[in-house]
Amino acid sequence: MSMANIRDQDSWVHQSDKEGATKKAKDLVRMAVANAAELSPLYRSTLPVVKRALIIGGGIAGMTAALNIAHQGFEVVLVEIEKELGGMGRKIHRTLQGDNIQKYVDDLLEKVTQNEKNRDYCCRFFRHQGKFQNSADCGTCHVSQGDKSRGTYCSYRCP
Image (tube, rainbow, N blue to C red; front, side, top):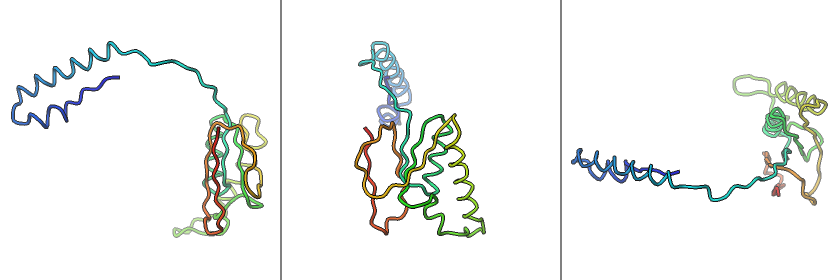
């Protein structure tokens, strides 16, 4: 890829000389095209992809992320420290507009549990207490932790 930076190297510099600016712009484009014609890739490599995602946090954001990834055909491992999914959504009952948060969380929970039984995509839920001791074989990791007041912080590095 090659770029002709006409704005910075030409338009602003030669504001009063339109003919000279046009000539220089043509030269910059010509040089960029000539440079691009000579380029070659540095190297080609194939990397293995692990089609599994680890979602830490089973609140609204975590469940939504898990469902979106699962609908794309990837296996999802959803980890929550509490007994049930829902996170802070379990403590809020209505929005300022009057929408029922509990119904929304219940609908999400139903979709996650239905996903667990569907063979097309998998969304498994684990309750986890304590720190992660072992590494999970995953291609991506999403941390959805909302309650920082308890002093529990998750950090995870996917290989």
